Amino acid sequence: MNFAKRMNEDVCSGCDGFIYDYCEECKIKEGNKMKELISQLEILAKDERKRADQTHGDRFSSNHEAYAVILEEMDEAEFEDKVFRRNLNIVWDKVKCDLDPLNNWKDLHDTAMRCSAEWLQVATMCEKAMEVEQ
Image: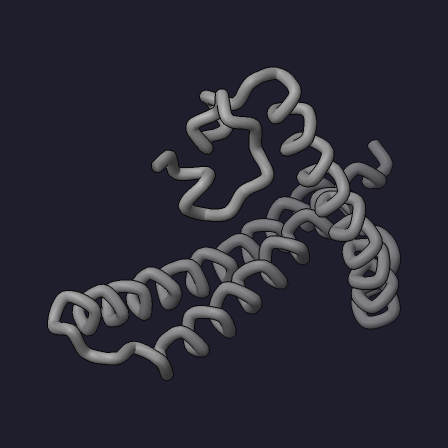
């Protein structure tokens, strides 16, 4: 049984379930799903931008400031990524020992959401940086 079928993915019988092995029709379907998700993220980014503008002003004063803010946001995202990886290793250790990682799945979910929020802030600040006057 191929990976896609194990994961109950909606791909044709000619695909093995990995994006690089999808047929052209399935690549288009997968691409459309990603475009839809990115479109939803753009809406969240706009909301985050409004919040950030109210708190910190609507423009960076220089490219240096934009770089520093983006670097800070990226540092926070990478911290959450490290926490996620640590928690994932804990889950794997439990799985290998046939222990139930039920509580750890919630930790992973919460950390992944925080990480996603941090990367959304990075994207938002990148957009804001495009508006720096030269």
